[in-house]
Amino acid sequence: MKLQTLQKRGSKLAMPNVQVAILEETTPSITPFGEKLNSIGLMPFRPVAIDVFQVNLGYLCNMTCEHCHVDAGPTRTEIMTKTTMQQCLKAIQASGATTVDITGGAPEMNPNFKWFVTEIRKISATIDIIIRSNLTILVSNKEYRSYPDFFKEQRVTVIASLPCYTEANTDKQRGDKAFVRSIEALQKLNTLGYGQAGSGLQLHLVYNPGGASLPGNQQGLETDYKRVLLEQYNIVFNHLYTITNLPISRFLDFLLEEQKFDDYMQLLLESFNPSAAAGVMCRNTLSVSWDGYLYDCDFNQMLHLTVEPTAPQHIQDFDVEALLQRSIVIGQHCYGCTAGAGSSCQGTVV
Image (cartoon, rainbow, N blue to C red; front, side, top):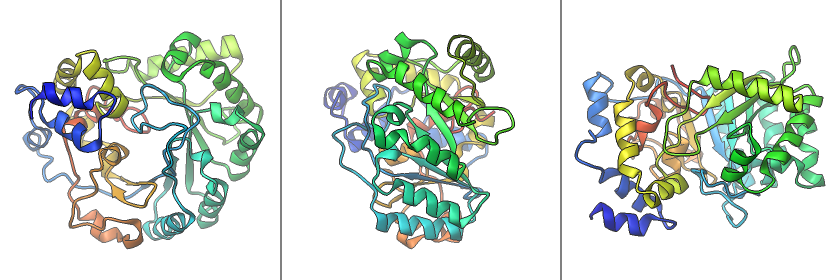
């Protein structure tokens, strides 16, 4: 199938199988990702541990951000059930994972969200529970306004998306009033101790580029964010994570519509970093979808690329040893995680 045909089918309608086809039918100059790994001695590509359990509680969200690789929004109906959460809890305990990374959509909108977080905390007082919040949900209505206090009670780490420290750029990506609502939520978190020195309450922000480019230097951007947010809004936070936009979902739509797909893929290829490839998140992370299926990473989940067939496919069949023996499922989109300083859910890799 020719790329031009896929572009027509993909724009605004890109189903996972169509996205995979688009990504595989790149220009001849784009080396298959597996060949690139083989050239630096990383094949077969296998996990080294399961330190991080990343659990997607559903694609329902109060926002429809143009860069969202999950394609989340208010009309999505996919929500993790309590039964699947119970299966996740058993697996988390069996795995010995040190981090549980809870994401969405807006994970706070799952009706069993608080119960799930509380049960994870019962497993271990020291396990790092991460909540990935869009911030605006925390100031949207009376119910969600209580969530920052719950976060403090359970001593969770908050990782919040703030694509820019200016109102115009943030609203362009995330919608009208997104910035002022995000600032309100950050100020609330600060009053509870989040981001404050010595509190132990971690607050991190996430930056991603607004267009078809790689993120700037993470440390430099963090310095700028901290200066502007403190001077203008009296906001403090711990760290800024820069994340590369992967060519999937809504960002893939953008690349196709702007006819920048080939150029962006070439940029990712030319920016390939062997050191970043060795440390990508799929080597120590297991991603669990809202319906309990297992993936090597959150991005593979969006493309419906489950873990290889020889490994357990669903959380109810969780087996640490079997999953550690699997080969990681890769594709051309993986160039996004290995470009420049690398990209993971915790920011740069190197």
